[in-house]
Length: 235
Length: 292
Image (cartoon, rainbow over all chains, first blue to last red; front, side):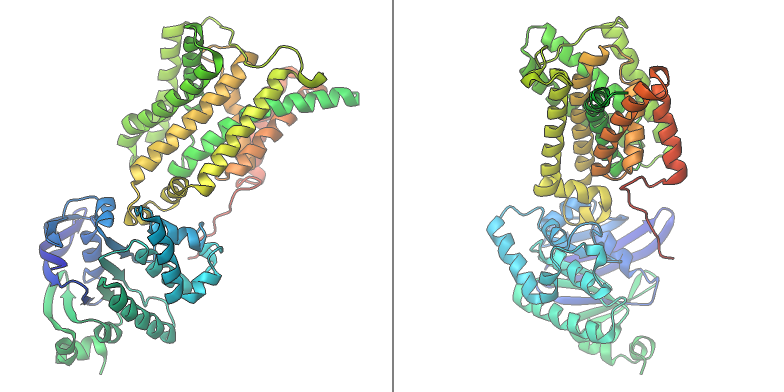
């Protein structure tokens, strides 16, 4: 198992946000966390990375990671594309990418990965010397995904990659995510408001409501669920 | 006012300006990481200059003592961050400012306690005679400018071209994203303090032969450094350096020809107030615009 989460609780100060979430992910699989605004999806991702106080167990490839520092968790191979993209706005696009590979010592492989990333997102090559804050929203999202990829992760946590992007761009980005998943053999945990896109990409999905998992299954099953269709897919 | 006299004052201004530039740069480095101005920066420089004095007095040749002092300052700076600043990381601004002032007072009195308040002379590594037959500027002043520029070039190279320098810049501007790529942000902050202390130590050792060594030697200089950092833009390293040289020259010219030496320090205060009133972001600082 790539990731096993059980009985996960998380709180911001006194405000409890997730109440005993549990789920599991196979290596190289794509899992979607669906749910309305404020359901606790972003908090779940932040909890996995040790960015909020948690209770419960998180195992990454069999190893307990709950309670460890964010830096250590990143070093294990979990790359988080956070809510709001987390771009280093004052640095160049290339510096952003190199920071993604900060913990790696295999220099030759890093250079090769840089080329690979430019292969997935050719626009970034043209923008490599440009200050990241001056990139368009779409380019910044590509940069954020690329920065995560530069970590050579085993698991990518993607928080609303479609946020603020035009529909055409979202489709393009999701196609690239699928290609990355297949070629790089990296698992993806995807948080999305755009449930239709997410379910097309994912193998499995979990529906979260007010901090609890209320429905889980294969993406195909979830897509057929009447309640999900009415509430999240809108038909 | 002859041309010769003006050139003399400008060169002397550049020499002291280099000192202000170094200290201003140290202030900017800490500001980058914490968004606070370290009031104890001058006292840290003073204290490490005393360490150099002890080493030299114990018989160590100048340059080894110089390098050792820079190393000690670096460790001392990291130590201060870890022990004193870390615990108040999330404290309100005013609390941290009080800690800075406390640090200032502690360093000052510990230096006075160990070394007494008697003024001591501090050696210069440069010859007494003017070099290259240039009579406008003493060898020490010329040397101090050279050392300052070398330090600045080293720092620029470090921050611009090394992965660690990049990580430090990243940690200062976006700690959360930095953690997500595995950067140990806490250590980057400590490293920043170490570097700032090392730069300050160089400034202290370069200025001590001119102002002599005593526990209060840096108080006026820190004020000029504040003015320099503000003039250049408190978040701009390059601006702080230019600001340092500008303040040095301005101070000397005004002191010599306009207001007299007694009012020199007032120049710094007027500059500080003037910059804050007219252009709070400084000459090279970034104006932050927030979209709402």
